[in-house]
Length: 213
Image (cartoon, rainbow, N blue to C red; front, top):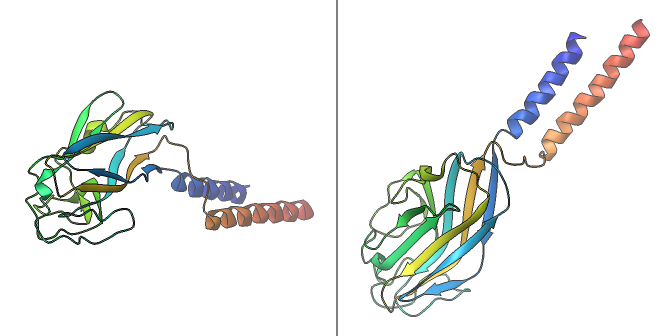
């Protein structure tokens, strides 16, 4: 009986470990361009769960004219991209606004611009530098502003390019929630295999105990 209890405990621990924290990701893949303009990208989050950690990934470019467009990757202009014109903010369902990048966070940048990159805003990332670059970086304000609140509701990412020419192009953006309360993912195939093996072993153990009785 101790063996049976131990087996069930091991299986329970396996699934508890796998479902301890779930990542819930909402992504918008609509191409947008901003040139002395601004707009909100809206995410209707239908999942419930208290936020333990929130990260934001944005794939974008800030090039000297001309646009690189959805199929492009490298800047092709011949002058300064003016990365200092970039503004990005996150608005929570309760109306709280958090600054990711503000005007002047970056300097003007190198000719003609870094091209298409993905920047992830993460409180555990590196400090934002004065140049746009790919990687994980801490935003202007801490994302802990949203820790402990329910992820459910309408979230908005605000994008702005403050001055005409040298457009800001956004290719995709994602909200990445980490929560212990969110629905658990389906177990990985390896986990299912271990679970099946455990049930098989349990059945064999019971048959052996009947024969010995």
